[in-house]
Image 1 (cartoon, rainbow, N blue to C red):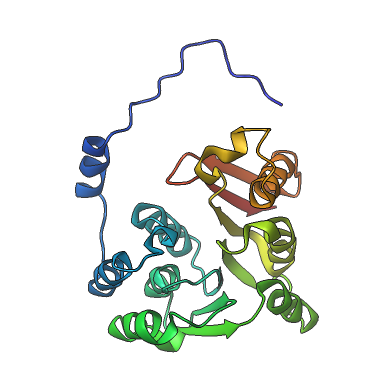
Image 2: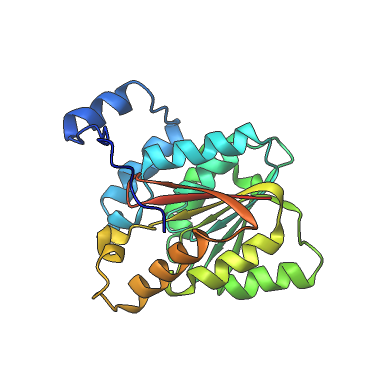
Length: 227
């Protein structure tokens, strides 16, 4: 484990004022994104929604690498799939994987249609690991440009390994919630989800198959680039 340099670390303080300044000077939301954020905010589980700033970063990365084939693992109300699809070319595709379709009719489909990207998004219902394994078994290894993992935390390591097979060299895997409300810092926290995320974080720090950036964004974001 690398030790922190003894020099003073120049961390800027975080505050609502700083966050507001940043969003005022960078955040660009489409009509469909705005609508979906507002509708999701009314839901009791709205905290599950990936942050708008985080998703803008990820969609910019998709745009930068000219992504066409993408995976969205953990759809919820469809915001991440929407954000990715909006930057893909007309023949681009988002395979959107979720264990439930409870939010599909009231949130996902209306937002996707509003943005005219519904034809780019292929929703797959079922356990994500099974769907990913089926893709591998059907010859799709190395054909995807980007994957976002934001699903069952206890499955994170398995989902990562499956995505690594499916992603092309220099493709990107983004992993959300890697700080997990800072629970991963507490070694005494033995909750299965916390243990799983901590295990993956420890593994990624030494995984020579990839290059990584671990960002203190929202609830923690790791960006993995396959070598």
